[in-house]
Image (cartoon, rainbow, N blue to C red; front, side, top):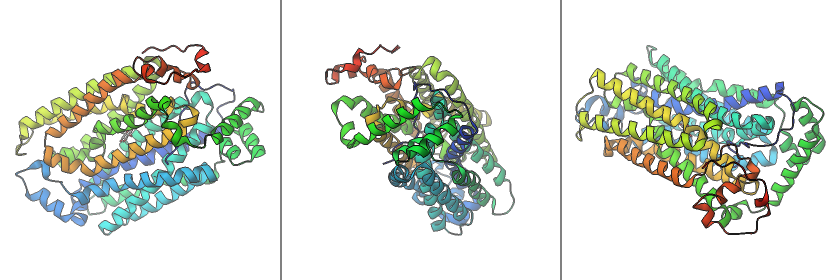
Length: 514
Ligand code: BGC
Protein backbone atom coordinates (compact mmCIF):
# COMPACT_ATOMS: atom_id res chain seq x y z
CA UNK A 1 0.00 0.00 0.00
CA UNK A 2 0.97 3.61 0.17
CA UNK A 3 3.60 3.01 2.80
CA UNK A 4 6.09 5.65 3.67
CA UNK A 5 4.36 8.88 2.70
CA UNK A 6 5.10 11.89 4.89
CA UNK A 7 7.52 10.05 7.16
CA UNK A 8 9.17 11.89 9.98
CA UNK A 9 11.02 10.59 12.95
CA UNK A 10 10.89 13.27 15.60
CA UNK A 11 13.17 12.78 18.56
CA UNK A 12 15.64 10.65 16.62
CA UNK A 13 19.28 10.45 17.68
CA UNK A 14 21.75 12.99 16.42
CA UNK A 15 24.80 11.52 14.68
CA UNK A 16 26.61 14.64 13.64
CA UNK A 17 27.28 15.32 10.00
CA UNK A 18 26.61 18.52 8.17
CA UNK A 19 24.17 20.21 5.93
CA UNK A 20 25.71 19.19 2.61
CA UNK A 21 24.99 20.01 -1.01
CA UNK A 22 23.23 16.67 -1.29
CA UNK A 23 20.92 17.49 1.57
CA UNK A 24 20.23 20.88 0.05
CA UNK A 25 19.34 19.38 -3.33
CA UNK A 26 17.21 16.82 -1.52
CA UNK A 27 15.22 19.66 0.00
CA UNK A 28 14.67 21.22 -3.41
CA UNK A 29 13.44 17.97 -4.90
CA UNK A 30 11.23 17.32 -1.89
CA UNK A 31 9.82 20.79 -2.25
CA UNK A 32 8.92 20.14 -5.89
CA UNK A 33 7.11 16.97 -4.76
CA UNK A 34 4.93 19.11 -2.48
CA UNK A 35 4.54 21.82 -5.14
CA UNK A 36 3.23 19.34 -7.67
CA UNK A 37 0.63 18.06 -5.24
CA UNK A 38 -0.42 21.57 -4.22
CA UNK A 39 -0.53 22.89 -7.78
CA UNK A 40 -3.02 20.20 -8.70
CA UNK A 41 -5.17 20.82 -5.66
CA UNK A 42 -5.38 24.52 -6.49
CA UNK A 43 -5.58 24.58 -10.28
CA UNK A 44 -8.81 22.74 -11.10
CA UNK A 45 -11.22 25.05 -9.23
CA UNK A 46 -10.10 28.18 -11.06
CA UNK A 47 -10.10 26.43 -14.41
CA UNK A 48 -13.60 25.01 -13.91
CA UNK A 49 -14.87 28.48 -13.11
CA UNK A 50 -13.58 29.90 -16.44
CA UNK A 51 -16.37 30.45 -18.99
CA UNK A 52 -14.35 29.43 -22.06
CA UNK A 53 -13.33 26.18 -20.42
CA UNK A 54 -16.90 25.33 -19.41
CA UNK A 55 -18.27 26.30 -22.83
CA UNK A 56 -15.78 23.99 -24.60
CA UNK A 57 -15.93 20.97 -22.33
CA UNK A 58 -19.04 21.15 -20.17
CA UNK A 59 -21.57 23.11 -22.27
CA UNK A 60 -24.55 21.91 -20.22
CA UNK A 61 -22.97 23.25 -17.00
CA UNK A 62 -22.25 26.50 -18.82
CA UNK A 63 -25.83 26.87 -20.03
CA UNK A 64 -27.15 25.95 -16.61
CA UNK A 65 -24.88 28.51 -14.97
CA UNK A 66 -25.91 31.30 -17.31
CA UNK A 67 -29.62 30.53 -17.45
CA UNK A 68 -30.89 29.15 -14.19
CA UNK A 69 -31.14 31.97 -11.79
CA UNK A 70 -33.82 30.66 -9.50
CA UNK A 71 -31.40 28.44 -7.59
CA UNK A 72 -27.80 29.57 -7.13
CA UNK A 73 -26.80 26.46 -5.18
CA UNK A 74 -27.21 24.11 -8.14
CA UNK A 75 -25.52 26.21 -10.82
CA UNK A 76 -22.51 23.93 -11.12
CA UNK A 77 -24.00 20.58 -10.11
CA UNK A 78 -22.49 18.06 -12.56
CA UNK A 79 -20.92 14.69 -11.85
CA UNK A 80 -18.79 14.99 -14.96
CA UNK A 81 -17.37 18.31 -13.79
CA UNK A 82 -16.46 16.90 -10.37
CA UNK A 83 -14.94 13.84 -12.05
CA UNK A 84 -12.46 16.21 -13.70
CA UNK A 85 -11.27 17.20 -10.23
CA UNK A 86 -11.68 13.94 -8.36
CA UNK A 87 -10.29 11.44 -10.92
CA UNK A 88 -6.80 12.53 -9.95
CA UNK A 89 -7.21 11.41 -6.33
CA UNK A 90 -8.66 7.98 -7.02
CA UNK A 91 -5.83 7.39 -9.56
CA UNK A 92 -3.33 8.56 -6.91
CA UNK A 93 -4.80 6.17 -4.38
CA UNK A 94 -4.57 3.15 -6.69
CA UNK A 95 -1.08 4.11 -7.91
CA UNK A 96 0.24 4.41 -4.38
CA UNK A 97 -0.42 0.68 -3.82
CA UNK A 98 2.03 -0.12 -6.64
CA UNK A 99 4.39 2.69 -5.76
CA UNK A 100 5.27 1.25 -2.38
CA UNK A 101 6.39 -2.09 -3.89
CA UNK A 102 8.41 -0.34 -6.61
CA UNK A 103 10.01 1.96 -4.06
CA UNK A 104 11.03 -0.94 -1.85
CA UNK A 105 12.33 -3.26 -4.58
CA UNK A 106 14.03 -0.80 -6.92
CA UNK A 107 14.79 2.20 -4.72
CA UNK A 108 13.31 5.64 -4.18
CA UNK A 109 14.83 7.22 -7.28
CA UNK A 110 13.11 5.09 -9.96
CA UNK A 111 9.77 5.87 -8.31
CA UNK A 112 10.50 9.58 -8.38
CA UNK A 113 11.64 9.37 -11.99
CA UNK A 114 8.59 7.40 -13.04
CA UNK A 115 6.25 9.68 -11.05
CA UNK A 116 7.76 12.83 -12.56
CA UNK A 117 7.66 11.46 -16.12
CA UNK A 118 4.03 10.28 -15.91
CA UNK A 119 3.09 13.58 -14.37
CA UNK A 120 4.79 15.41 -17.22
CA UNK A 121 2.80 13.40 -19.75
CA UNK A 122 -0.41 14.23 -17.85
CA UNK A 123 0.23 17.96 -17.89
CA UNK A 124 1.00 17.87 -21.64
CA UNK A 125 -2.22 15.98 -22.42
CA UNK A 126 -4.23 18.35 -20.23
CA UNK A 127 -2.72 21.45 -21.82
CA UNK A 128 -3.47 20.11 -25.30
CA UNK A 129 -6.91 18.67 -24.49
CA UNK A 130 -9.61 18.91 -27.14
CA UNK A 131 -12.27 16.80 -25.41
CA UNK A 132 -13.39 15.67 -21.95
CA UNK A 133 -11.78 12.25 -22.35
CA UNK A 134 -8.35 13.87 -22.85
CA UNK A 135 -8.92 16.04 -19.81
CA UNK A 136 -9.77 13.09 -17.61
CA UNK A 137 -6.98 10.86 -18.98
CA UNK A 138 -4.59 13.74 -18.27
CA UNK A 139 -5.89 14.05 -14.71
CA UNK A 140 -5.52 10.28 -14.18
CA UNK A 141 -1.87 10.44 -15.33
CA UNK A 142 -1.28 13.37 -12.96
CA UNK A 143 -2.83 11.26 -10.21
CA UNK A 144 -0.50 8.33 -10.96
CA UNK A 145 2.44 10.75 -10.87
CA UNK A 146 1.28 12.06 -7.51
CA UNK A 147 0.79 8.54 -6.13
CA UNK A 148 4.44 7.77 -6.91
CA UNK A 149 5.79 11.15 -5.84
CA UNK A 150 3.90 11.27 -2.53
CA UNK A 151 5.14 7.82 -1.76
CA UNK A 152 8.80 8.17 -2.66
CA UNK A 153 9.67 11.85 -2.09
CA UNK A 154 8.91 12.08 1.64
CA UNK A 155 10.65 8.76 2.21
CA UNK A 156 13.69 9.92 0.24
CA UNK A 157 13.68 13.13 2.18
CA UNK A 158 13.51 11.55 5.61
CA UNK A 159 16.33 9.15 4.74
CA UNK A 160 18.68 11.72 3.26
CA UNK A 161 18.22 14.46 5.83
CA UNK A 162 20.20 14.45 9.07
CA UNK A 163 17.98 13.20 11.94
CA UNK A 164 17.72 16.56 13.60
CA UNK A 165 16.13 18.12 10.52
CA UNK A 166 13.49 15.48 9.90
CA UNK A 167 10.59 16.94 11.87
CA UNK A 168 11.02 20.38 10.34
CA UNK A 169 11.29 18.92 6.85
CA UNK A 170 8.08 16.99 7.33
CA UNK A 171 6.28 20.25 7.95
CA UNK A 172 8.27 21.78 5.05
CA UNK A 173 6.55 19.33 2.74
CA UNK A 174 3.16 20.66 3.86
CA UNK A 175 4.45 24.21 3.36
CA UNK A 176 5.41 23.29 -0.21
CA UNK A 177 1.88 21.97 -0.77
CA UNK A 178 0.39 25.29 0.31
CA UNK A 179 2.85 27.22 -1.90
CA UNK A 180 1.79 24.99 -4.81
CA UNK A 181 -1.87 25.82 -4.13
CA UNK A 182 -1.07 29.53 -3.96
CA UNK A 183 0.96 29.37 -7.19
CA UNK A 184 -2.02 27.72 -8.89
CA UNK A 185 -4.39 30.43 -7.61
CA UNK A 186 -2.05 33.14 -8.92
CA UNK A 187 -1.61 31.44 -12.29
CA UNK A 188 -5.39 31.11 -12.67
CA UNK A 189 -5.85 34.75 -11.83
CA UNK A 190 -3.29 35.67 -14.50
CA UNK A 191 -4.47 33.33 -17.25
CA UNK A 192 -8.12 34.33 -16.76
CA UNK A 193 -7.12 37.83 -17.95
CA UNK A 194 -5.88 36.46 -21.28
CA UNK A 195 -8.19 37.35 -24.12
CA UNK A 196 -9.10 34.41 -26.31
CA UNK A 197 -9.67 30.83 -25.34
CA UNK A 198 -6.37 29.37 -24.28
CA UNK A 199 -5.80 30.77 -20.74
CA UNK A 200 -6.88 27.54 -19.08
CA UNK A 201 -4.41 25.61 -21.26
CA UNK A 202 -1.54 27.57 -19.76
CA UNK A 203 -2.89 26.91 -16.26
CA UNK A 204 -3.01 23.17 -16.84
CA UNK A 205 0.25 22.92 -18.81
CA UNK A 206 2.31 24.87 -16.27
CA UNK A 207 2.11 21.84 -13.98
CA UNK A 208 4.96 20.61 -16.17
CA UNK A 209 7.43 23.02 -14.57
CA UNK A 210 7.72 21.36 -11.13
CA UNK A 211 7.43 17.97 -12.87
CA UNK A 212 10.51 18.71 -14.99
CA UNK A 213 12.47 19.75 -11.90
CA UNK A 214 11.55 16.53 -10.14
CA UNK A 215 12.25 14.28 -13.13
CA UNK A 216 15.62 15.87 -13.88
CA UNK A 217 16.45 15.91 -10.15
CA UNK A 218 15.71 12.19 -9.93
CA UNK A 219 18.07 11.47 -12.84
CA UNK A 220 21.00 13.07 -11.04
CA UNK A 221 20.24 12.25 -7.42
CA UNK A 222 21.80 9.21 -5.74
CA UNK A 223 19.68 6.62 -3.97
CA UNK A 224 19.46 6.66 -0.16
CA UNK A 225 21.78 4.59 2.06
CA UNK A 226 18.72 2.91 3.61
CA UNK A 227 17.54 1.75 0.23
CA UNK A 228 21.03 0.51 -0.75
CA UNK A 229 21.22 -1.51 2.48
CA UNK A 230 17.74 -2.88 1.89
CA UNK A 231 18.88 -3.99 -1.57
CA UNK A 232 22.10 -5.63 -0.27
CA UNK A 233 24.71 -3.12 -1.40
CA UNK A 234 26.52 -2.40 1.91
CA UNK A 235 29.70 -0.84 0.46
CA UNK A 236 27.80 1.53 -1.78
CA UNK A 237 25.59 2.42 1.18
CA UNK A 238 28.60 3.30 3.34
CA UNK A 239 30.13 5.48 0.65
CA UNK A 240 26.87 7.23 0.08
CA UNK A 241 26.45 7.94 3.79
CA UNK A 242 29.96 9.48 3.90
CA UNK A 243 29.16 11.61 0.91
CA UNK A 244 25.81 12.93 2.07
CA UNK A 245 26.85 13.54 5.66
CA UNK A 246 30.12 15.17 4.57
CA UNK A 247 32.16 13.21 7.16
CA UNK A 248 33.97 9.88 7.50
CA UNK A 249 32.63 9.08 10.95
CA UNK A 250 29.41 7.43 9.93
CA UNK A 251 29.93 4.06 11.64
CA UNK A 252 27.31 4.52 14.34
CA UNK A 253 24.61 5.76 12.00
CA UNK A 254 25.49 3.00 9.53
CA UNK A 255 25.20 0.34 12.24
CA UNK A 256 21.82 1.68 13.28
CA UNK A 257 20.58 1.77 9.70
CA UNK A 258 21.57 -1.88 9.26
CA UNK A 259 19.85 -2.82 12.53
CA UNK A 260 16.71 -0.96 11.52
CA UNK A 261 16.74 -2.66 8.15
CA UNK A 262 17.14 -6.14 9.75
CA UNK A 263 14.38 -5.39 12.20
CA UNK A 264 12.00 -4.29 9.48
CA UNK A 265 12.80 -7.43 7.44
CA UNK A 266 11.65 -9.50 10.43
CA UNK A 267 8.27 -7.82 10.30
CA UNK A 268 6.67 -10.29 7.95
CA UNK A 269 3.07 -9.48 8.76
CA UNK A 270 2.79 -5.74 9.29
CA UNK A 271 -0.92 -5.91 8.48
CA UNK A 272 -1.60 -8.62 11.04
CA UNK A 273 0.61 -6.77 13.51
CA UNK A 274 -1.30 -3.54 13.42
CA UNK A 275 -4.53 -5.39 14.16
CA UNK A 276 -3.25 -6.60 17.53
CA UNK A 277 -4.98 -5.14 20.54
CA UNK A 278 -1.83 -3.42 21.78
CA UNK A 279 -1.76 -1.24 18.65
CA UNK A 280 -5.42 -0.24 18.86
CA UNK A 281 -4.77 3.44 19.62
CA UNK A 282 -2.37 3.78 16.67
CA UNK A 283 -4.79 1.95 14.35
CA UNK A 284 -7.67 4.20 15.41
CA UNK A 285 -5.56 7.33 14.86
CA UNK A 286 -4.25 6.19 11.47
CA UNK A 287 -7.86 6.02 10.25
CA UNK A 288 -9.48 8.82 12.25
CA UNK A 289 -6.91 11.57 11.64
CA UNK A 290 -6.90 11.54 7.81
CA UNK A 291 -10.68 10.94 7.76
CA UNK A 292 -11.31 13.92 10.03
CA UNK A 293 -8.76 16.07 8.17
CA UNK A 294 -10.80 15.76 5.01
CA UNK A 295 -14.14 16.16 6.84
CA UNK A 296 -13.07 19.64 7.95
CA UNK A 297 -14.25 20.54 4.45
CA UNK A 298 -10.92 22.21 3.61
CA UNK A 299 -10.82 20.90 0.07
CA UNK A 300 -14.17 22.44 -0.69
CA UNK A 301 -12.26 25.70 -0.39
CA UNK A 302 -9.03 24.46 -1.99
CA UNK A 303 -10.72 22.80 -4.98
CA UNK A 304 -13.78 24.91 -5.46
CA UNK A 305 -13.19 28.34 -3.87
CA UNK A 306 -13.65 30.20 -7.19
CA UNK A 307 -16.75 28.12 -8.00
CA UNK A 308 -18.10 28.67 -4.49
CA UNK A 309 -17.46 32.40 -4.67
CA UNK A 310 -19.18 32.54 -8.05
CA UNK A 311 -22.10 30.56 -6.66
CA UNK A 312 -22.69 33.22 -4.04
CA UNK A 313 -22.64 35.91 -6.66
CA UNK A 314 -19.02 37.11 -7.01
CA UNK A 315 -17.84 38.31 -10.41
CA UNK A 316 -15.21 36.21 -12.25
CA UNK A 317 -12.24 38.29 -11.20
CA UNK A 318 -13.38 38.68 -7.62
CA UNK A 319 -13.80 34.91 -7.33
CA UNK A 320 -10.27 34.20 -8.51
CA UNK A 321 -8.87 37.05 -6.42
CA UNK A 322 -10.58 35.71 -3.29
CA UNK A 323 -8.98 32.33 -3.97
CA UNK A 324 -5.57 34.05 -4.15
CA UNK A 325 -6.23 35.72 -0.78
CA UNK A 326 -7.21 32.48 0.95
CA UNK A 327 -4.16 30.84 -0.69
CA UNK A 328 -1.87 33.43 0.93
CA UNK A 329 -3.49 32.93 4.31
CA UNK A 330 -3.04 29.17 3.96
CA UNK A 331 0.71 29.50 3.38
CA UNK A 332 1.36 32.04 6.12
CA UNK A 333 -0.66 30.16 8.73
CA UNK A 334 1.31 26.99 7.94
CA UNK A 335 4.48 28.87 8.91
CA UNK A 336 2.79 29.78 12.22
CA UNK A 337 2.31 26.07 12.88
CA UNK A 338 5.91 25.23 12.00
CA UNK A 339 7.30 27.68 14.54
CA UNK A 340 4.86 26.85 17.35
CA UNK A 341 4.28 23.12 17.14
CA UNK A 342 7.31 21.98 19.13
CA UNK A 343 6.96 24.78 21.66
CA UNK A 344 3.25 24.69 22.49
CA UNK A 345 2.41 21.18 21.39
CA UNK A 346 -0.02 19.48 19.04
CA UNK A 347 -3.13 19.42 21.20
CA UNK A 348 -3.44 23.15 21.72
CA UNK A 349 -3.14 23.77 17.95
CA UNK A 350 -5.74 21.09 17.20
CA UNK A 351 -8.16 22.46 19.81
CA UNK A 352 -7.77 26.15 18.98
CA UNK A 353 -7.94 25.41 15.25
CA UNK A 354 -11.11 23.33 15.75
CA UNK A 355 -12.91 26.05 17.71
CA UNK A 356 -11.92 28.74 15.19
CA UNK A 357 -13.03 26.63 12.21
CA UNK A 358 -16.34 25.81 13.91
CA UNK A 359 -17.16 29.45 14.64
CA UNK A 360 -16.20 30.61 11.12
CA UNK A 361 -18.29 27.91 9.43
CA UNK A 362 -21.34 28.56 11.62
CA UNK A 363 -21.34 32.28 10.87
CA UNK A 364 -20.84 31.70 7.13
CA UNK A 365 -23.76 29.22 7.16
CA UNK A 366 -26.04 31.68 8.95
CA UNK A 367 -25.09 34.55 6.62
CA UNK A 368 -25.54 32.58 3.41
CA UNK A 369 -28.77 31.09 4.78
CA UNK A 370 -30.15 34.55 5.58
CA UNK A 371 -29.26 36.03 2.20
CA UNK A 372 -30.05 33.11 -0.09
CA UNK A 373 -32.53 31.10 2.01
CA UNK A 374 -33.55 27.63 0.88
CA UNK A 375 -34.61 28.76 -2.56
CA UNK A 376 -31.12 30.01 -3.41
CA UNK A 377 -32.11 33.41 -4.71
CA UNK A 378 -30.71 36.76 -3.67
CA UNK A 379 -27.27 38.30 -3.66
CA UNK A 380 -24.69 39.51 -1.17
CA UNK A 381 -24.00 43.19 -0.70
CA UNK A 382 -20.34 44.29 -1.08
CA UNK A 383 -20.00 44.48 2.71
CA UNK A 384 -21.47 41.00 3.22
CA UNK A 385 -19.20 39.59 0.51
CA UNK A 386 -16.16 41.03 2.31
CA UNK A 387 -17.27 39.44 5.56
CA UNK A 388 -17.64 36.05 3.84
CA UNK A 389 -14.12 36.28 2.39
CA UNK A 390 -12.79 37.30 5.82
CA UNK A 391 -14.50 34.33 7.50
CA UNK A 392 -13.22 31.93 4.86
CA UNK A 393 -9.73 33.27 5.63
CA UNK A 394 -10.11 32.75 9.41
CA UNK A 395 -11.32 29.22 8.65
CA UNK A 396 -8.41 28.49 6.28
CA UNK A 397 -5.88 29.96 8.78
CA UNK A 398 -7.26 27.73 11.54
CA UNK A 399 -6.96 24.65 9.32
CA UNK A 400 -3.48 25.61 8.19
CA UNK A 401 -2.04 25.74 11.68
CA UNK A 402 -3.90 22.68 12.95
CA UNK A 403 -5.26 19.81 10.88
CA UNK A 404 -3.24 20.73 7.74
CA UNK A 405 0.28 19.96 8.92
CA UNK A 406 -0.69 17.93 12.01
CA UNK A 407 -2.85 15.64 9.91
CA UNK A 408 0.44 14.37 8.46
CA UNK A 409 2.84 14.94 11.35
CA UNK A 410 0.97 13.17 14.15
CA UNK A 411 0.32 9.90 12.30
CA UNK A 412 3.96 9.82 11.18
CA UNK A 413 5.31 10.06 14.72
CA UNK A 414 3.06 7.66 16.63
CA UNK A 415 3.84 4.32 14.95
CA UNK A 416 6.53 2.04 16.36
CA UNK A 417 8.85 0.59 13.68
CA UNK A 418 7.09 -2.77 13.46
CA UNK A 419 3.85 -1.21 12.26
CA UNK A 420 5.19 1.99 10.68
CA UNK A 421 4.80 1.05 7.02
CA UNK A 422 1.33 -0.39 7.53
CA UNK A 423 0.26 2.63 9.59
CA UNK A 424 1.54 5.10 7.00
CA UNK A 425 -0.20 3.17 4.23
CA UNK A 426 -3.51 3.41 6.02
CA UNK A 427 -2.98 7.10 6.71
CA UNK A 428 -2.10 8.04 3.12
CA UNK A 429 -4.82 5.83 1.62
CA UNK A 430 -7.62 7.05 3.90
CA UNK A 431 -6.55 10.63 3.18
CA UNK A 432 -6.62 10.21 -0.61
CA UNK A 433 -9.86 8.22 -0.46
CA UNK A 434 -11.72 10.96 1.39
CA UNK A 435 -10.09 13.69 -0.70
CA UNK A 436 -11.64 11.87 -3.67
CA UNK A 437 -15.03 11.53 -1.98
CA UNK A 438 -15.25 15.22 -1.03
CA UNK A 439 -14.09 16.31 -4.50
CA UNK A 440 -16.71 14.10 -6.14
CA UNK A 441 -19.75 14.91 -4.00
CA UNK A 442 -19.23 18.55 -3.07
CA UNK A 443 -21.18 20.24 -5.88
CA UNK A 444 -24.09 17.82 -5.40
CA UNK A 445 -23.98 18.32 -1.62
CA UNK A 446 -24.08 22.08 -2.16
CA UNK A 447 -27.09 21.70 -4.44
CA UNK A 448 -28.99 19.59 -1.89
CA UNK A 449 -27.81 20.81 1.52
CA UNK A 450 -27.59 24.45 0.35
CA UNK A 451 -26.30 26.73 3.11
CA UNK A 452 -26.67 23.70 5.44
CA UNK A 453 -23.41 22.45 3.87
CA UNK A 454 -21.50 24.81 6.15
CA UNK A 455 -23.34 23.41 9.19
CA UNK A 456 -22.61 19.90 7.95
CA UNK A 457 -18.85 20.50 8.03
CA UNK A 458 -19.10 22.53 11.25
CA UNK A 459 -20.77 19.50 12.85
CA UNK A 460 -17.84 17.29 11.84
CA UNK A 461 -15.35 19.86 13.12
CA UNK A 462 -17.13 19.81 16.49
CA UNK A 463 -16.97 16.00 16.62
CA UNK A 464 -13.26 15.88 15.70
CA UNK A 465 -12.34 18.57 18.20
CA UNK A 466 -14.05 16.64 21.01
CA UNK A 467 -12.35 13.48 19.74
CA UNK A 468 -8.90 15.11 19.97
CA UNK A 469 -9.69 16.53 23.41
CA UNK A 470 -10.64 13.11 24.75
CA UNK A 471 -8.44 10.66 22.86
CA UNK A 472 -5.22 12.24 21.61
CA UNK A 473 -2.36 12.46 24.10
CA UNK A 474 0.31 15.14 23.64
CA UNK A 475 3.26 13.87 21.60
CA UNK A 476 5.41 17.00 21.68
CA UNK A 477 9.07 16.26 22.54
CA UNK A 478 8.45 12.54 23.05
CA UNK A 479 11.20 10.46 21.41
CA UNK A 480 9.82 7.92 18.94
CA UNK A 481 11.24 5.01 20.92
CA UNK A 482 9.30 6.12 24.00
CA UNK A 483 6.08 6.94 22.23
CA UNK A 484 4.26 3.82 23.48
CA UNK A 485 4.34 5.27 26.99
CA UNK A 486 2.02 8.13 26.12
CA UNK A 487 -0.74 5.63 25.38
CA UNK A 488 -0.05 3.64 28.56
CA UNK A 489 -0.39 6.80 30.58
CA UNK A 490 -3.52 8.00 28.83
CA UNK A 491 -6.67 7.64 30.99
CA UNK A 492 -8.66 5.86 28.27
CA UNK A 493 -6.11 3.98 26.14
CA UNK A 494 -4.13 2.98 29.24
CA UNK A 495 -7.16 1.17 30.67
CA UNK A 496 -7.86 -0.64 27.44
CA UNK A 497 -4.41 -1.79 26.44
CA UNK A 498 -3.42 -5.39 27.25
CA UNK A 499 -1.32 -5.49 30.38
CA UNK A 500 1.82 -7.19 29.09
CA UNK A 501 5.04 -7.27 31.02
CA UNK A 502 6.80 -4.62 29.03
CA UNK A 503 10.48 -4.19 29.88
CA UNK A 504 10.64 -0.91 28.00
CA UNK A 505 8.30 0.56 30.59
CA UNK A 506 11.26 0.70 32.89
CA UNK A 507 12.85 3.30 30.65
CA UNK A 508 13.08 6.84 31.84
CA UNK A 509 9.69 8.50 31.73
CA UNK A 510 9.20 11.15 29.06
CA UNK A 511 7.65 14.46 29.94
CA UNK A 512 4.00 14.15 29.07
CA UNK A 513 1.92 17.25 29.22
CA UNK A 514 -1.53 15.88 28.44
C1 BGC B 1 -4.40 18.18 2.98
C2 BGC B 1 -4.92 18.52 1.61
C3 BGC B 1 -5.28 19.99 1.58
C4 BGC B 1 -4.10 20.85 2.00
C5 BGC B 1 -4.47 22.29 2.08
C6 BGC B 1 -3.22 19.06 3.29
O1 BGC B 1 -2.74 18.75 4.54
O2 BGC B 1 -4.04 16.82 3.03
O3 BGC B 1 -6.03 17.71 1.32
O4 BGC B 1 -5.70 20.37 0.32
O5 BGC B 1 -3.60 20.42 3.24
O6 BGC B 1 -3.38 23.10 2.39
